[in-house]
Length: 158
Ligand SMILES: [Fe+2]
Ligand SMILES: [Fe+2]
Image (cartoon, rainbow, N blue to C red):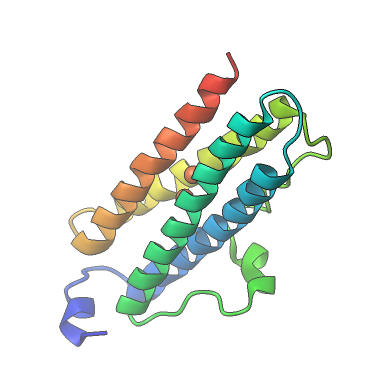
């Protein structure tokens, strides 16, 4: 990437790349978990649940792509070996429950993962604010979407 584009980032770029790699891994793990639940969900209302999971899965894959693009712009590289995603993530794989119609547990899996994502992006926003405007803008955009995800699934608990 352009030298100047990296130089204007007034922070430790190596450390930032490490943080970005972690959320990148989180995004893929969430994507797979949600995608899996979108396709395997059964029970009454499975079509609606499937659509919710599908929407989130799509968003998380998009986030992974946006983070990857930013990492590469900064001269970094996202996790190459997918087997190493979990090792590099902030949190363990958000494992879907055994019961494919256990909506309550599935919703909890999503809420825990989203809470983790909100935390991670919130920290990244604080770290980059006023220092790396491009990353700051990106993490705020993703943070806002994670907040919507949490709310969508919180509402399902009522
Ligand atoms: Fe995400
Ligand atoms: Fe999310």
